[in-house]
Image (cartoon, rainbow, N blue to C red; front, side, top):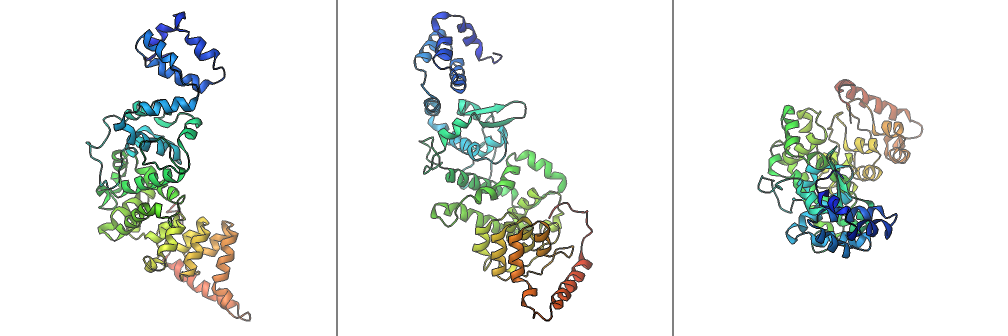
Length: 400
């Protein structure tokens, strides 16, 4: 026991009258997680009498242990605790403590995070959540303490924002994370668009949650049914976020594009469109909602690293429903990227057989008379020659 908190317990461990060993190792053999929680609780006690009283009130199982922890969280800290636990229950990659500390205090309508809004110490999250979380001091990562905590927290039909209950539904978890990430990306601090390349590391240092918020909000959004009225708030938020592309320098939208593609030249970042990046991340519901009207002017606009159209990027990443929506809205199936490659070329290379079949169905080849199939090849070669003359050299950019 190297933890300083263990001093009282270590002193009391040799006092046989307390029966600590008997209670924790005989009656509950093989329940190591339960034993760990009880030892942690006993370590918080100040005297032998306190330890004795805690042993008399020992919870009988893990669920009761966790509920006791939840009930002891002060009412003023419940919102922070539940937001932090929701992130940890639904997170798609490991998070560091400083990221969760920021995520836990984001609220609807926030437009920035000043020093007065931040927790005094990121470690306050550990104090608030107690044995429900585990902190790895080696890599600064925080997780739920055990899979049983996930079971304790997640239950269908419960809202994350009901702070009186520890329960939260899986859908409400992803809704909260998507909303908090989008709220974060819409902060007024990012309204001026992309920053100088030299300042990117400073921006990320100032905003610890920026990487996760930028790269993972689309994945959380894809887990929601945006036609369900319960998700109206997050749908409105994402539409407003994409609409910032019309602000000066592309506003929060192009600041986000720089976050996910920091090596991209600013000139290319500023040419990015919401439709292109919705297709990049496979946000099918948004594409279907917007491609015919709000984003119709963007349907064949080329952008990104390799001057690709939304259809090209959707075909490249295998987003079948996005491909269908784009073609039905009139996207050009022959449009090429900056290397003279078609969506069909990459559907074949990437072995997206369903997309290849769809592109074949919509391609000009299918509309030419059977006696003159060479006309399709002529048309493609003409397009390819034109595109190749404008192409950027291979190897300068690493991604689509």
